[in-house]
Image (cartoon, rainbow, N blue to C red; front, side, top):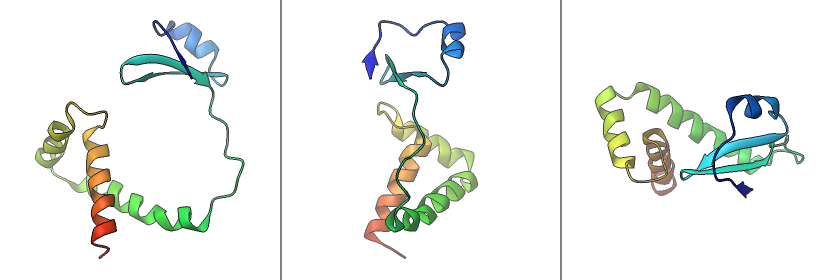
Length: 99
């Protein structure tokens, strides 16, 4: 990862897509080599965790706009989005109460 003074223009980003990945990390412009495909097979433990994430996505999509707005407000001032906050809380609750 390299920290930049500013992100380059969209034309440069588009030209280097697939080689260099430009992004913001906590508001700091950064660049890194483009992420590559995973070289190791998925472990059974990773595969077993997928349903929890699937449930978290499904639940987020069924929440009312008011509840989603509450999560967005709760995430204000953190590096998480409201959806990230809801997912994190759901997964942590599943670890404590696995039913």
